[in-house]
Image (cartoon, rainbow, N blue to C red):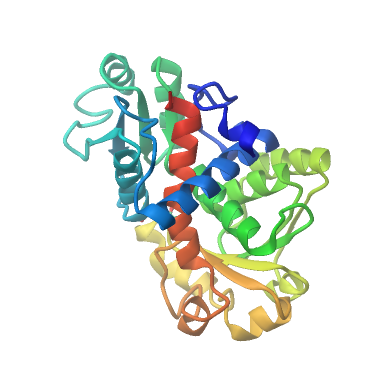
Length: 321
Ligand code: CP
Ligand code: NVA
């Protein structure tokens, strides 16, 4: 780890985009985890950091969907390391008042990186292609790579390893599942998905996850029955049944996902040492019961805390000096 920590600003992540969880190798993830553990310890001990590796660095935040965790952890994280977050909100008319390309060609002249949360994944790839500064995906309809990074860091803290762990995602084959499948595969985990008919994942992402799993000793399993798939899992993960941008499908989704709740009996079926995970925000009584998410086996709020540490670590490796 000391070797990893010595590599500020010269590591393999230097000035690279993060658009998909598949963009990060095992070594990249380990580098981020090592620095995140160090930053977490330092912040908890001293409420501040000895160094300011992001001094003089400004990152623009374009958030086209609602956010609590992503916005606060990027803004507070940059602040804690001497950098600055510029929240652009809806005021820039992204892609409407001005094209994605022109926004990129302006921002690259003023700031050091762009964090973006938007709808179509193609917007993020277009922005990254046009901008001469790194672009970081803070959630699209297809992926949520910083969430997966924080979640795997949380699991590693809890179990002391990732290789060989079994995580079962219960519910929608959505953006959060996609990133967990890719990142988990890279880290040699078995990632299972139990989803209702009609709400499966993107086959191209599953195919890529299968390829990454085969290369890293992991496994990808996709099926229907939550009870069958939960059995023998180290972690049960769930997320909302209606993601941002799908509000008009709410009625059909709530009906289809009945029976896909993480409750105490499903957690018992997973195993005595199994934990429950959720990216938040949560709907208690839908995808997860209050008893589970607010209970002693829930890692949900550790995951939320770790967004801060992991993103700070990532930014130091990417933009630090
Ligand atoms: N988990 C997550 O990304 O939370 P926000 O939507 O509040 O940013
Ligand atoms: N799948 C959810 C995740 C929120 C963090 C959504 O896209 O709304």
